[in-house]
Length: 178
Ligand SMILES: [Zn+2]
Image (tube, rainbow, N blue to C red):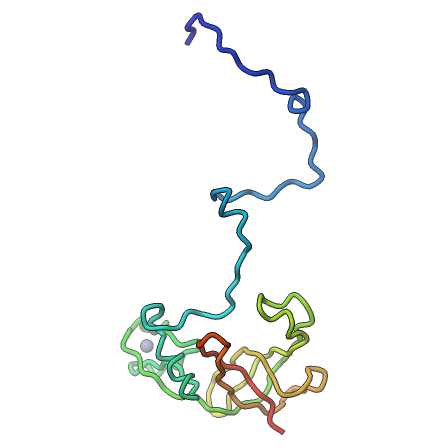
């Protein structure tokens, strides 16, 4: 493709002719506008809960009534956790809501001492753990309140505690029972 004409190109400055080695390679940059890249990364730890946001809104509505519930499949009796919109076993979408026991025992726990999710930085240290619900074949993960994590023990009795996270949304946690 010779046009016979000369294309005038600006001479790159010398610094660009010999690329310098970067100390550490930059990670791949996603295709975003520069304006978007300048925004802080926002991590909302909690789910959206209203009927126009999730088909699982009844779970959160019942939490607001002080009830922890989940879905069960009437076809095969499968009890789900977390609640589902379709049975993972038979794929039926005709599921029923059932209340779960309000008490349980700590199966395992750990402490968050740093690196907490946004909005929880001032709450460290706090305990999280797995809780076996009494009388239900479910092991739930969640925050454990009530006593310092250094005083928690495996087998610690706890109860389910629905709570308002502060903006009207509901979630659940566990609280130790003496
Ligand atoms: Zn099923």
